[in-house]
Length: 322
Ligand code: CP
Image 1 (cartoon, rainbow, N blue to C red):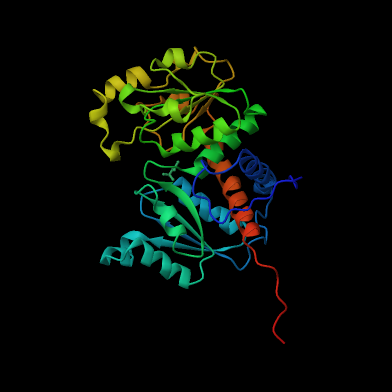
Image 2: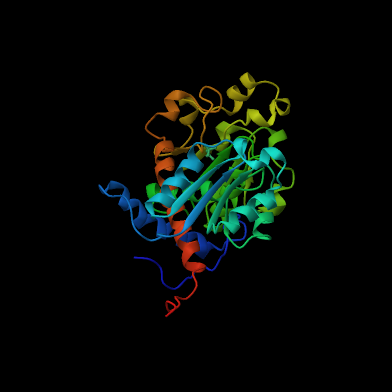
């Protein structure tokens, strides 16, 4: 069932930029059999029994945190949630000291979400636990990128040559960055669309194969997939477009606009959604939406990542001391 010819040899999952096409394909293939577990009455396998997964979230999260916790539990790992608001972080403990404390408690995996881009990379330099990036600043959200691609592949049967439009604040979106790396490695035709102030100026130098289109009606013409990004109000981005109303008029997805895309277009959104701003309710809950399936698939993809990292980093079994 799994591809034997390619081995996952990474200690950490920090980004999709440094993964190969084969690594990404292996994660997607590994996730498929894990998803079949979800329909069984007992959704657990003993794969990670005895391993410890620590969830260290410095930013709010519903989907990613719960999904990682369920993924770890379904693999029979022990899980620990660090409530940053009530931890010694509030007494001024540094990120590295916090991680070293968790390492001393023999955490096999530390899943971290942090507002600083590069925080997971920093930890990977200081601790022996496997570090998994659950979203760092504006950098990457690799597991979101992977679950988006898994969902596209599951629904469309392929990724290569599909027209995938990513709409919204590309500049500040870690979701967009992970999607860009993953989708381009797998051969999708990616179109970026959003207000000119929210599209990075030099993006065509990093991704010469990617198309930029500021007009959403033109961008989604013949689209197979539209991935709608959240307007990140908590990052005070309102000054980068004239008003929320204008954003919604020009870049919000609604029923009239969707007519420009293919009849079988898929609508993705990483969540949480601002209904009525970047997406209307009839689209979010409509026939084309796979938003809830993205959430379900997130667990399978995260199980695959925990599994592959554990295999890559497992030491040869030693004889028990006599
Ligand atoms: N998509 C996503 O990262 O959602 P959460 O912030 O709820 O984890």
